[in-house]
Length: 184
Image (cartoon, rainbow, N blue to C red):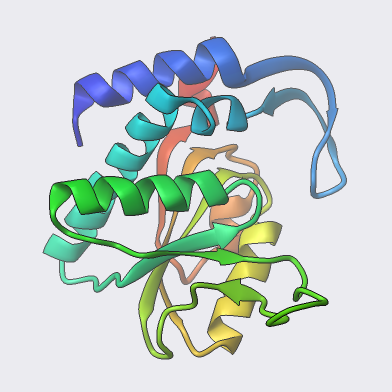
């Protein structure tokens, strides 16, 4: 993992995404700190850094014998990450397709829950911008496993260090940063 790229992403996260105030979290709790990572994943530089660092992690996993055939995660947080990783993987000459996981099946057209679904049995990386309690990732894992996919690992930009890692026990969690590394 490139330390220069990681340091630059850490700076962007601190400057753009680390917010203080009173925030309601997806899990229902409240927090005086919020990580709005979409401010980085929807920015050209931020997305490139995020995708590159997560792809570096994928390469480390592959080198250790972990198969990963595709990347996806819960919409909306994971959508730019998965797409960015697919693009950057193509540029690296090691294509890694991406897929999207809806919170509910479409009520029209194909009525799919997964878009661009990998073949059954494929090993996948589930990505998310922030892992707090792990609830949304667990729901995404349940959806992909019900579709016959195998979860090889979970990747995120920020682990809030609030029980998500423990809730995902049994799955390898690769976090680019822990909350404690971003607080100033």
